Image 1 (cartoon, rainbow, N blue to C red):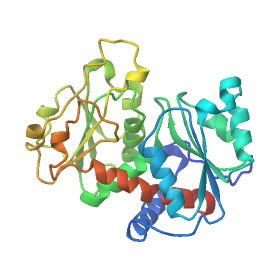
Image 2 (cartoon, rainbow, N blue to C red; image 1 turned 90 degrees about the vertical axis):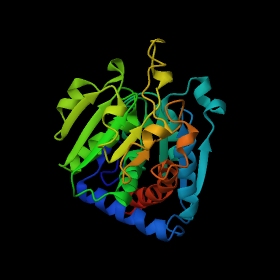
Image 3 (tube, helix red, strand yellow; image 1 turned 180 degrees about the vertical axis):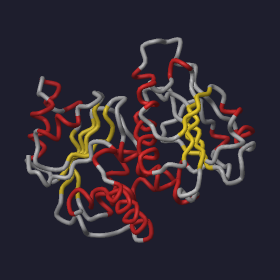
Length: 298
């Protein structure tokens, strides 16, 4: 593997300076969402798991950067004939300048990166990480809050299995020292104790969003990861919000969700001025434009 290849496998793939630069470029693309920086480049999408927002926003980002994409249709690919992950990656390398990969196995992105000389971008590895989602979440938070001031964030739902939560918490904890994390979940869906002990910032466990909603600056809802849970008794034990609950929050509080949503976030919240999850989706395009620039030219 070429030593200068820039992979995005986890939040730890970035220095704080990298993150600052990517966020700055994302803000540039928010104001100027068209460029030809990827003209002549082909980006491969390899999604072994379903995706709407990550897949489509990366495609949109490539096209807004003047590039083109190849989508490997997994259900019609040679993986159905027993082709190994390594062979799939090395095959796609022959046709592409970078690869965006989603896979159900935690930690498999290193396997992908180790067998190719082109950038690999982690679009979600099982219950592991989702680093590009964390960056677009940070970008969204920064539009509404001064992250140099103390902030409180309630992260709610399936914290044990949610890769978006893992990456966002790691990112915020690493670059800021004035966050308070309120970890709101059913006890069987809580973050691993070892993960929490590794954090620098204050963490408070809870099981009731209503007990903290009036004091937090950010509410981050997540769905139950049904595809990763064997115990049927847990599947219906998510933390839910209602519009009436949301109206108990401060006027400056923002509500976020990485989607897809289930019953934890009713549509009645969509018109509440605190709800920013559709802006999150749009911000994903700008952040992923910046990430593609970083991988190929940064």
